[in-house]
Length: 90
Image 1 (cartoon, rainbow, N blue to C red):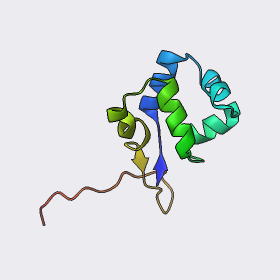
Image 2: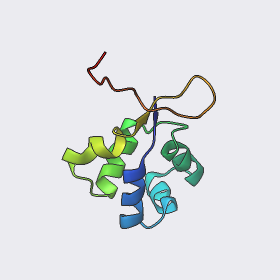
Image 3: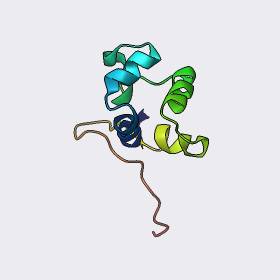
C-alpha cells in the first residue's frame, strides 16, 4: 500500500504555511518530508504524534489525516489503482 496525504498537506498550509517549516520542527530534511508526503517513505509513530501535536489535529481525526489515503500500487503501466469495491451483484 502507498499513502497520499491531501488533507494533511492542506492542514500544513493552514497552520504552518510551508512544508519546510514542518520539516524543521520535526527535525528532518524537507526532502525527507516530501518523500513521506508522496508515499516514497512512511511516517513513523513518533513523527505522527509530533505532527498531530504541531498541527492541532483532533485525535478523532488522526485516521483521516494519515490512513484514509491508501492507494494500491498497480502491477503494470497506468499508475496507482484504487482498491476494488464489491458491488454485491453477479
